[in-house]
Image (cartoon, rainbow, N blue to C red; front, side, top):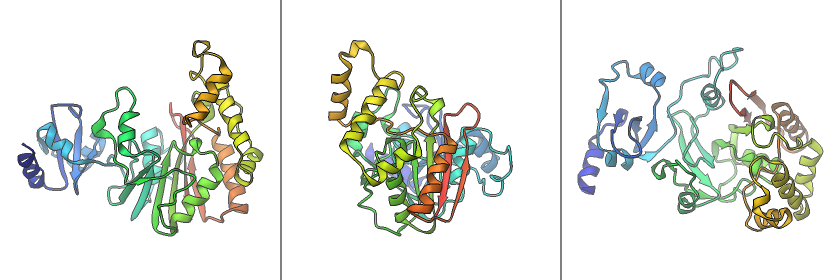
Length: 315
């Protein structure tokens, strides 16, 4: 069966639309190209395959799953992202922030939702956990076949396996809030880029998430974390998170002090810091003046019923 499926996979031309009515990928339409499957929504399909649904090949689930998961298809926003009001949804904003990415890059923390960077790019995936750990930690409803296998295991305050000046783009979606030292993380990512490269960040907005009852992290705190990181300050981060973030501690979990210290000991992945769009740009302004003189910033605040804002830093 494996041999027959491999032959069928090779016989599928790159650039084809496929669909299966079986298994966990049932009902979704994928654009298969260069050994990867890219989830395609109806708007993109209608723009690129006017013969839909006649242009879709119905195949078995095992063949679709033989293609590696890749980024979803995306529309070109390069000519319209400066037009006020043109970006109306989370999908629009995610496509727009990455639309000028070209060449080769890295996405860290893609999980089962790789970012919609243009299909012309080549993406290497990184994560703090190896693939097997990501499978073990998957949340309810997350399909194993959607999880991207990381080729690089690293975190956002190291990035040591990646050589400086080698990337055209770097993507971190809902990752920087998990960094103990976000200014350092941004500097390290910029170091990895070639001149003109793009650092693409998507950041949760404090009032839109379970952080809404926490205090907004101020610039002085972020600067102190950059220049003087400390274990004592990390303890403060954990205490604050479990005391004030919604849904992470209740009296049934036992004594509060013992609970948050147990989470600290296991290095539980918390939101160390909180931002609004404006406070994040304030941090970037300070970073540009004091740490790394990057070229330009494009950003977009929260749109519609989203919970995140979007930043593209050009080296």
